[in-house]
Image 1: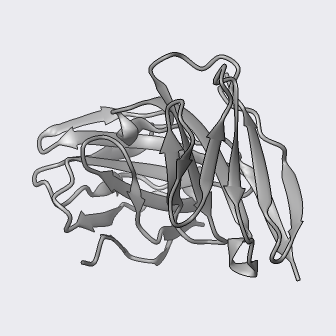
Image 2: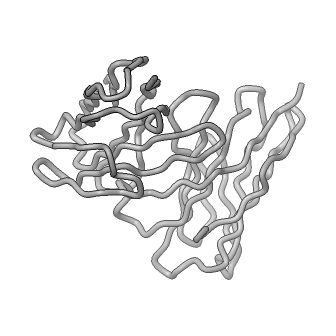
Length: 111
Length: 111
């Protein structure tokens, strides 16, 4: 099992550019989440999904869009990147709403 | 509005037991205590969780006080690989897609 796979691992953007962080899981997990982590901070929840076609906002949703068209995939879109979105992004999934399995992270720098 | 309180950091000697405290004095009756850890730059990893009984698995033991207002995560024989940030989280079972992580506690295992 690959678990939770995030791509890309590293990305550099210019202010105003758009991009999508990909997240895929092969464990048939219903629940998926996106977190961001800034230096010296804990993880902050951006968006989450309890199943295909259902998404909701977390603590810090502004500037990000998500969709969940399949159980396996939960992409995170930045429509117009800002320097404040420089961070490490983690995707996670869980089954039965208990234990989260995290991906390895995507490190994004916005210049 | 923090629901758990952990020390900022602690040290432990390799081979010794590491006892990581967590206060959660406002825990509700339906809330579990979860522990995760994050080794430098990696995604967080689930360790253990419990409601009121003590729990043990291959990674650690969780001791929850009778009044459930505090708990201790025990790593019985700490190794250098256990150096990480440890997060204590209280949350109802279910809804793990919305787990809120605080800043956690940095455990450093020294040789």
